[in-house]
Length: 343
Ligand code: SF4
Ligand code: SF4
Image (cartoon, rainbow, N blue to C red):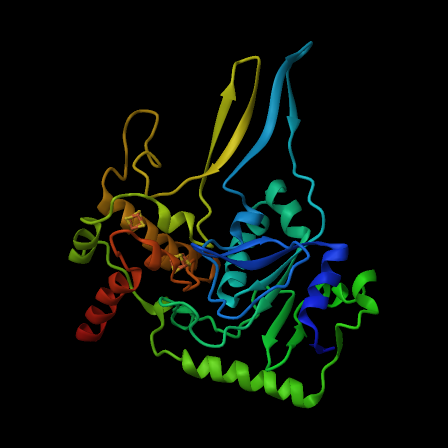
């Protein structure tokens, strides 16, 4: 069923009765997903969040297990999180597609129990973009759409007075059977006119962002002057990876003593010098040039070769946040130009 939410505030309040709810909230530094606090949720001027929903599925740091010496040697206690059912409201289509990439790594390839428990208890209500919402959006260049539904459970489109909500997954549909929403006055079945209005909003956004560039077609070259030109400025801060909704590398460190301690997982990035440092002291990627190359090869070749999807969803966060203005689109353009000259 397609639904029309006339009273968005009541709708969110009703969700919060049965789920923990995350909403986009504006702060001085920008927008962030934060816990709902029985408040008026404002979506006016909502671009996208500074950090993506990734941090709620795969936190920047977490304890994996604790250990201590017992009577029969070391004893381990797993710290699988306890996650209550949760809804994330207002996830942009690029970011929900980013969750699909994380699912591929943490659920499909092998099952990471820490990620799995959070993901299985998280329902995503996506929000269609009215067009490019941030200065560096390029979802349509990586095969996605401002009206896409990849990774969502429900897709919401803002109409003049309310939200049109389409079911994407069974879990999304089941949300409306939950006790607080089943008989809620916040929604009703959408009329054909409302569904048509939503279609128009979606099509307008798609037209506005239409692009002939297809970055899945770019053929990277290992030896090309652009790598050195751009890498010269990189300071290896790693913010491009940490804000990226799809970057998922981590490191595990142990703290404590040999008798008692814990294993802590934290985000890591191929942009850090010691990321690829081996125990022997050898580093296969000793300089910035190789590290920058690795990041783009992983996103635009290796992941695509392996899973049939790019590891970039075109959110533009890395472009906006890079302190030295490195723009991955500029690097990729160097290969596009070469391709058109030689073809
Ligand atoms: S944000 Fe820019 S400077 Fe920092 S590691 Fe990434 S590319 Fe390098
Ligand atoms: S590489 Fe940059 S544009 Fe692509 S998903 Fe990551 S942060 Fe977004």
